[in-house]
Length: 132
Image (cartoon, rainbow, N blue to C red; front, side, top):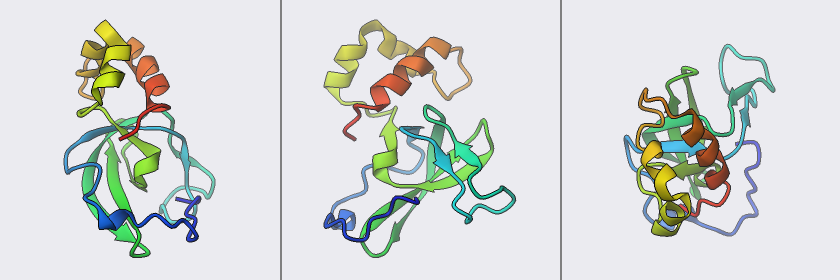
């Protein structure tokens, strides 16, 4: 959340949240501790690009942005993230599913304990272009 720009004129909370409780999401970028995560050094990587997590709560920040608490099960970290830092895995847009083709089926098991190593790399690449 270190990139919060108060001058951003977008008022996200004027619209419904992009993600819902329990939704499986993937990190679009690495997230480092800005000092608000207890027990980790400032600058320590909490979430890596491509990590899969689940939305556990939705709050607001500065009466402008939604902050999604995402539980990254593999690392054990629960981190607050903005929508622009996340991409859904449960509700991918049709155009993204088309680009993935047969690999889209592998995404169903990503983050659910399935063997989807190849899907993880594909998902990281697709997360760059995610619009949701």
